[in-house]
Length: 36
Image (tube, rainbow, N blue to C red; front, side):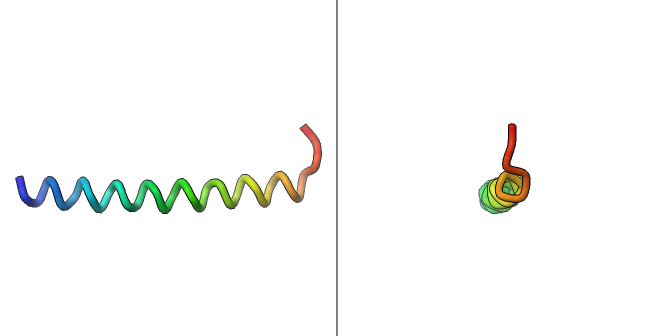
């Protein structure tokens, strides 16, 4: 159970980090491609 909780917290942090990276990539793509 302890390992499960630790893995869940780690996954959660990684998801947040991945989401931020994805937002930055999308933002950059929008700046490069102004249109639609």
